[in-house]
Image (cartoon, rainbow over all chains, first blue to last red; front, top):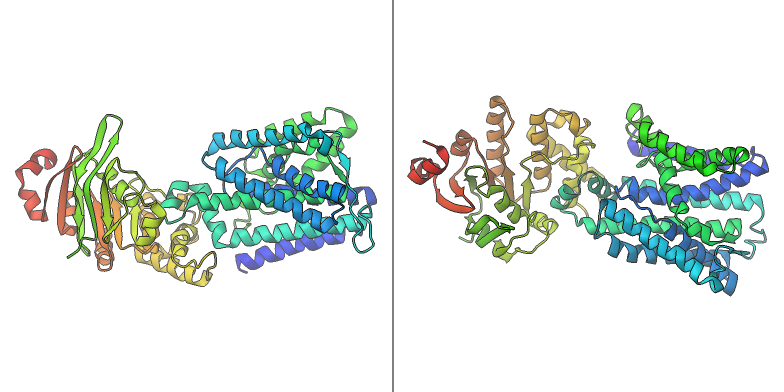
Length: 312
Length: 241
């Protein structure tokens, strides 16, 4: 079987499995999995930049928040529909990513990391500063008009809307990965100077990766606001820039299913740990240390080196 | 006849050091040219400026009668200037196929669209040309050093060179490998102009039609291999006899 066919079968099976899962899960876990799928889209976006292009950002919360506020504010103030709100949110994320990329891609490595952190902090502080509009860290409730008569509080709509977004993002990332652009991004990750000397304007490709990554993160942020009915500054804070890094590393940077796996593991780890202690962030920190020391490739990265070399 | 590539007063200064000093180099289409000279003579810096890796401090570069002095490397590659690194610069974590696919797809992309079967064809042609056809699926870092050099050459071939710059290509190759390598360069030279930096004098004498000798950033002699062999200045500077 060709790589393409194997990839389609595997990822199709994952999507089908997630669809079937909603009929067997109890309601509490149903909502959790919906949340995980939306956050996994965020991690998928992060992975386009870290896993496939080799650029590590510590400011992705700005894109998530751009999508979240871009969708939430017009729904809250202007009574946009959910669809129009989501589109506005994604547009905000794309625009922000484009402007950010133009400036930040003059740097690489640690400098890029710091610049992304600075941008994200500026946006975070802006959400606090303009609290008359954003309502700061107290946030606001988003109530989008029902979709075809079904309210967004209905678990079935939540789950399936999240699944549609996740499936689209996963297949989109697979297409990108297997496209000529994906090959160039991998080249940049492995050896940027060589890629430039082989005929590619690496800046443009990196900018494209930043825009795709920011757009996916914003789509996740906007969907999160609509499905879980809340927008607040916390989602723009540094913690939400660290999460996708952690999810991606845990699942395996540069693998397509890594973000979903990492998000699920971390979500349930935190869920489990917070039953025992209020210092659940300690668990997150410990997980990061273990990961970096013993599993630098993440779970699926490890599986790929061992058994499945074709895994995209 | 118009030169394929021609430099005028090309210089590169790194702080106080002048690595390349007002070089006028002219290469005709179709020739195999060798540049020789002791270590630190400025050979790699000179070709680095030709392929766009290093920005010149002053002077101009004309390629097919176009000024490319300030053109970025990817523009030069599309014009046919292809460089292979002195220290192999391959994508170590990728398979041989993927290493060659990246340059192979460059000329086949129409916008962002591409027919993958054409890439496959081109990759296999390049890998077969250097004799690595059977190793397409192997990871590049698992290859023997000599094979990595050949992979580097396959990448250059897949890019469709009109001017192929080889920076010390035989360094680290075994005697037996060098012979077939020379044969390969002769085949390539039927379709492309070859500019070769080389320390191995037998290789230079057997391959090159003209030889340029550099020392301390300047060209000190130029001529046919036999002229260069006889040149007293060259013998003093380089051949050491």
